[in-house]
Structure formats: C-alpha cells, structure tokens
Image (cartoon, rainbow, N blue to C red):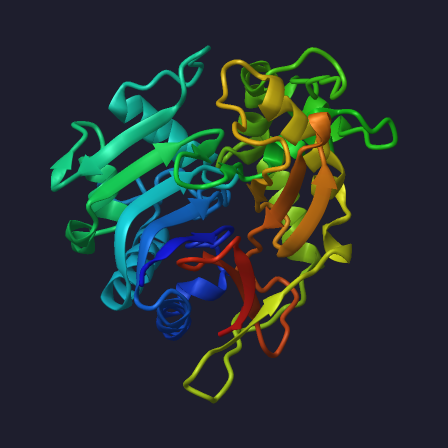
Length: 364
C-alpha cells in the first residue's frame, strides 16, 4: 500500500556539506524510503532548502539554464535515485531561505507575482506530461528526464496545506519563525544586515494583527538581502563560516555497510528552540488568517505544522487557540557541518492506514 506522503527538508543539494550530493548516499536514502513507504507514495513533499541556491560564488558560474552546474548535477542524481526506487504520484516544492532565489527565478518565469495578496501561491508546474510554459527549463535542469515518472509537480510558497482526506496539514519551511526575521527578541540585534545593505530588520509583533501575507511582505526584503547568492551580507557571513570550519579534504563520511539503517525518533527537547517557541504563534496565525485555509472538523481533531530549517527532526505537541491540539513536526535536515564519522538525516513518512506521521532518523 502506498504511503500518504513522504516529507523531506533541508537537502541543500549543491552545498559542499550536503550529505546527499553523493550518489551512494542518494541511493541509500532512496532504498530506505522505499522500504518505509512500501515502494510507493501519493506525495513527496520537499519542505524547503531542497537546493543550495545561496552560496556566494562568481555570478557567471552558471550553466546555460542559469543554475550552478554542481547543484544541477547533484539534484538530477538525487531525483534519479529516488524515482528509480519509489513510485511517486505528486512532487511538491515548498521553498525555504536557501532556495528562495530559485523560487524567485521560477515565479518570474511562470508569471507568478511574488506578492499575491489574497491569492494562494500554489503553482502547478507539470501535470500528465504537460508543463507550465515557464517551468520547463527549471524542471529539465533540476529534475531531469525522470520527471516523466511523476504525474504532478507543484510549487508552493510560503505554505502548502493539505486537507480533505487528511487531518489539517500545513507545511512551511520555517524561516518566517526565525527570531532574526520576526524581530521579537530584543537581545538579538542583527546590526550587520542594516550596516551592509541599508535594510533594517523588519519589526514584526508576533502578538499583533498579522496575517501570513503581511508577514510575507515584511520579511521578503530581509530574506532576499540575507540569502541572495551574492549579497554582501551573505558573502561576509559565508566567509566567516569558512574560517571557523576545520580544514578537511573530505566533507562526507559513510559507513562500510551497504544497507542504510533507520529508526523512528521522538525528539521533544531539541525542538524547544526558536522554531518550537514560535510554532504556537504560527499555528494560531494559520487558524485566524482568512487568506489561509484553517482547520475544520471537530475541535479535538489534531492539526499538524511541518517545519524544517534547523535540521533537528522530531515532534512538539501543543494546544493552540480554541484548545485545538497541534503537533509540530520537524522534518530535519541532511547536512554534515560537524564532520561526524556517521551522518544521520531525517525522513518523515505518513504510512497508509496510520494515524499520523513518523520521523525516521536515517544513517547514510
């Protein structure tokens, strides 16, 4: 039986410390997910930072499609491995901060306004072999010929929401909930952004009269200035990170065993961080924002908020307004910035006939 969906986030394909740049890791992950979802899933939801689109580099270091060639190669290898082992009906991209610049490129090509007001930013890129006129270059470059195996490909930002046959499921990468974006922590003053770009951090009162789209408006300049590939702020931040990282000739480490391992995890403590603290506020915002579908059904029906961004993985349960129970699910990440001898990432699977999702900790 096909799983309801598989959710992954923070693949960072093309980043030099992404575990999933390596073909061995790509195949290991594909085999593991195939085992977890019985070889088929209704949806693969990529919950942000799928591609590494913000590493500062020579602006001319792109191929004819406008994408960095290394990211292009890593992405095609990943989708080739996945689609060779798993039957996937629908692929959904939910964009994050690291691939925000790619979303801007795609939105421009497809004629989608970045500021949609009361219009849901959910774009159909491919259905039954027919492409959106502006999406072909993107799909060819970053998925490749294997995309013919997919019935539907969608793009959603800043949220992707599922309902109907499911409980209420909201997917958002998580950068809207970052203290540096929200500006609600007086002890964190991001002076560098203002000094480097002349753009001050947007002040967002998380207890005020906000909507998803007003938050979108206030954070777009911040996210763009910080995460564009060659912004001054991003370039200097990246240079500082490089100086702090240990000098090694090998970024990736893999076990000798050809079989990957996985185990369900229920990590509550690591999720009590910025995203965990702000998940309640964001869930309440989704419930009252008339531009976003809100949970329906009995008030005791659980709702789910899926987040990535901080690469932790795990769950956090809380109660939002009207005493509706929520579970925040952190879909984890796939980078090895610490140089550990064995690397674990996270795969979230909602099995057929299950009552909810499981986050699996996967070693590659």
